[in-house]
Length: 440
Image 1 (tube, rainbow, N blue to C red):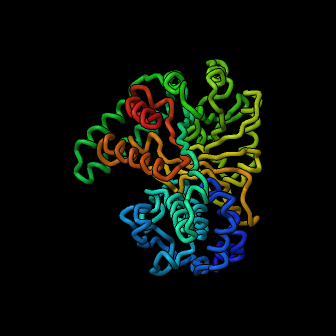
Image 2: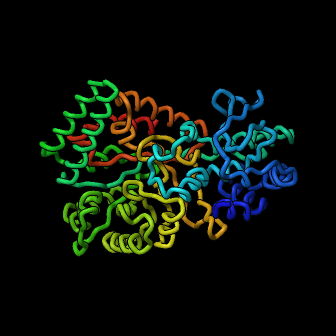
Image 3: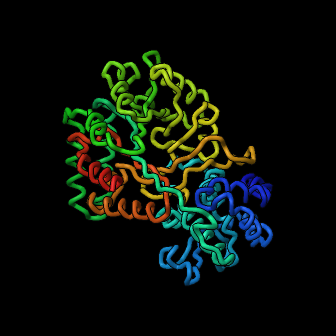
């Protein structure tokens, strides 16, 4: 039996129930907890935690009165055998999905995937296309209200207000050799993949983009354009800033993967002053190799706080370098309060099948972290770097994600890098379209 399964089996049904009710209090309402307790604890359904190694994506058909709550009337669940909707422990399902149990199982066996879904071999990708946890919460509301002959809103209260937040990672303030090399290599690789499937159009576009990155002298100052475009945004945008002081030395890996600017450069350019005057929320963008290091994250946070003269609460790991076991625990120990790394590098969607701001369960301490995770649903590279075909097709998929978020009372983040608004990338039109959709 794996260590993860041993820990799972030690979680009492009562503790698991309380945790899910706390994290989904906006959906389930604390006043209805007594009724929910009777439904899910006193009439307990079969647990699937003992079958961790055999869990896979399966489909449960909903009754007619709840068919509208799931695509084509079928809900995704993690099961080891075929089941019907009455046999499912929906509270347990929410716990397992919310805390990424399939990915944790993979990480225990093979190490972290560092936010590349392609490394999750054999997993049904529909797991990430819908906010299944949100939909399960909607089903619980309707089912329990129906069984108790109560009005759903009177019993549970209104649904939480959706919160779709535009966020940014400040990865560059000027073009560097490392950026030119990385993007040229990426575009050449993308072109060769296109050529392998006889897509000469994408091949030609990719080769042209690679040469442009190598030869152009583009300005990467898109931040002022964003500050103006987002001045009316509510809530205010969050921007994550890489923290490197003048005294820090850079190795080869840091030169290649980390941003090149220093905090003193941002002061000199007046960038930090402009952001603070615009009311933007400023967070930390921890370095490429900091994903499991309390010391690195803490020292970078302290340097940024010293420059800003204020406490830093938000963060997102650079390149979404992330481990379910280590990263949140390191961030929490460093004094951070909210992370938005929970998304994929190579696809848009809902990495833990949820669009909910929540406190992850710490499997070693057998309780929730104090730190919150705020999910990342869509970023610019999903549309332009990892889409097959034209960007318009990816924009359409982004709109589907946005529709799903609005249907399910979601909390989700969207990410756009300021340096991509220039000519090298040419992603400005897509940025303004996405921003307009978020504002509607």
